[in-house]
Image (cartoon, rainbow, N blue to C red; front, top):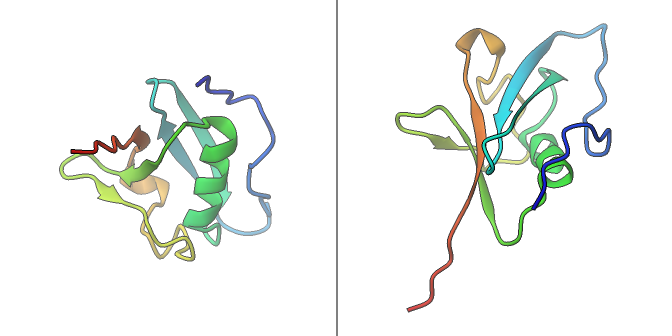
Length: 102
């Protein structure tokens, strides 16, 4: 499925009076996008953004880092709690999970 990083749908609201950071996404097709968010934005908000920008059939994993990647599974965890602030220069990716049946 196509990735549409130009859509405003799913983007978390940013309060410019509060601390912000940028998060870089690498989507399943290799395309990238950078999103500015508050530190109080949640992992669930990131998943909502990904679902609007890069819908995919089946499940996907939102991960941080490369060696080893860490899945971001707690939708209530804030950007700050998940230690996703920009100074770490992390990359986040969505990857498809294959669901093979024996």
